[in-house]
Image 1: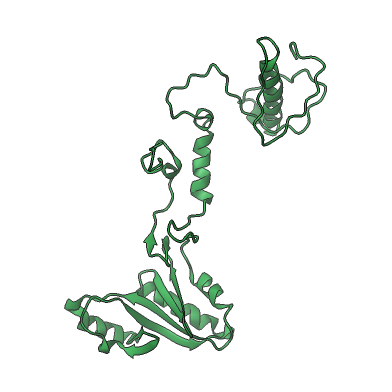
Image 2: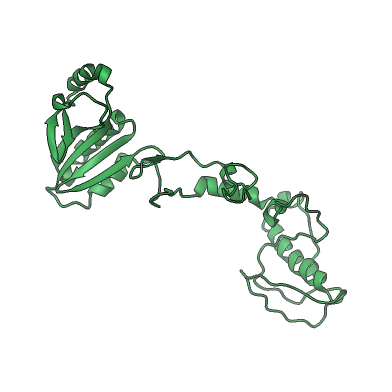
Length: 264
């Protein structure tokens, strides 16, 4: 290929390889006219004949054999870098696809406890219960904070739908015993001894707790285990709410995606 003759090379994948040499030694012939040309040519050949007619076609390099070469991207050293934020990803537009990939497939983790943050469903809550021994006592509640001004009316409405108990300090008490104030209450939806055959009953109670708890519920498992769940994009343990990821969150050119320290 051009002035390259009688060369046998083994170039490792997934490593940074630098090609150096004096002017005219064949650096560009190896990098662009051989490796890039063959990698791009094999990639283009994977498309249909109709699609190939719209793509850049490169000549086959004059080599005896090339094995194991992946699809290639080339950036010539004559390309102008317009800003200090330009990278290989922005110049090849790969960054745009990476942002979409992370937005759609990325797993959000809580910044405080590190646990995955996903909207939870009754099915996932049931999966957490399945590991319990049969006969374990469970109390299903939802958090509720009544306003002092209409607390009596709220108690009346809750009693109409059968929610007239609260869970406090490991005990179940009538909601009427609650003092006037803004304290958060754990309203009891159901109390049962766990049995796999009670799946439908548990699901109905979980759905009701999510509905009245504005997407939140709590499980109190005897003797002293407490689990919190949320069907929103929120860490139920740390009570931190997150917004759904957007492409700008993964862009250093966006204020919400830039580094908080250097803004880069």
